[in-house]
Length: 159
Ligand SMILES: CC(C)(COP(=O)(O)OP(=O)(O)OC[C@H]1O[C@@H](n2cnc3c(N)ncnc32)[C@H](O)[C@@H]1OP(=O)(O)O)[C@@H](O)C(=O)NCCC(=O)NCCS
Image 1 (cartoon, rainbow, N blue to C red):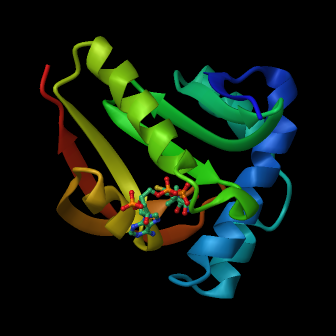
Image 2: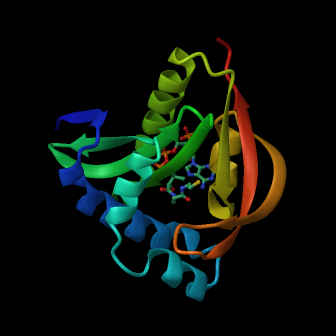
């Protein structure tokens, strides 16, 4: 079994969108109404990844034997972890943690002192476990205009 993390390219967007939608449905439905999940992740929208890339995000995929099972993205200018999604079939195997630590190392190497995240409610304990502390709570507007309760968190990076 060959595992690797690499930069995403345009031909990955479709499967990344599938991972996002499956992961959002599996994990986030514990914390949000089905209507919110449906408008956030109901319809395929691989173009959103292109838009994210164009707005300056760096996108990475974790692959197992060439198949994308997780993706994560950061924005160095905003000092932000933008997204981290693991395919439900592959969760609980350390993949989310490996991707997070890869992204943290990348952010650190750019000289950024802290990494912020707008965490979905279901992922707050995951982020807390990985060194993030809660700063505030607010509503987060997704790219399709859906308002979702989220928690702003920050992890200080020792440079
Ligand atoms: C949160 C998520 C990324 C975790 O990925 P994963 O690959 O299943 O997690 P890992 O197997 O790497 O877990 C690493 C550690 O975190 C713990 N962990 C995983 N999910 C957790 C959660 N929701 N709450 C608390 N701890 C969690 C694991 O038990 C493990 O602990 P250990 O090292 O003591 O064994 C994944 O559940 C996911 O994609 N969630 C939905 C998407 C989402 O909400 N993303 C955040 C958007 S801001």
